[in-house]
Image (cartoon, rainbow, N blue to C red; front, side):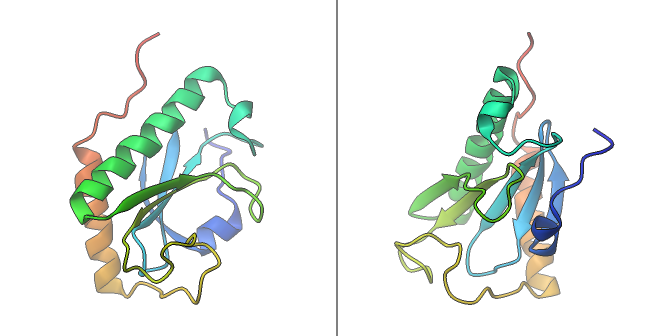
Length: 144
């Protein structure tokens, strides 16, 4: 979709990782948490129900498959998947690997404390780890 642009606030707070069949996958710039954001490439969509049934299924497939792969690869105690949209209305889904000892446990990660920006080496390492997981996944839409 050539006219798709992620909300500027999402762009400012995250780094691009890759394009999935439906979503742009981004890494939030907070090294305290393995925290991804999936943004469906659909114009003027703010709620999941605004996607057609096939896109809704694909969004859930992408979020859960990537979430499980990241939980397995990075280790963690819980996987949080959420779509809030109270600050940024554009539909986006947070996928966060949580650990009992993380800075926000057991509260949500958003709005908790001060974000710790990735340094270039740590950013490159995390992006490589995410891409390695994504490349092993089957995320294409089912036929029909």
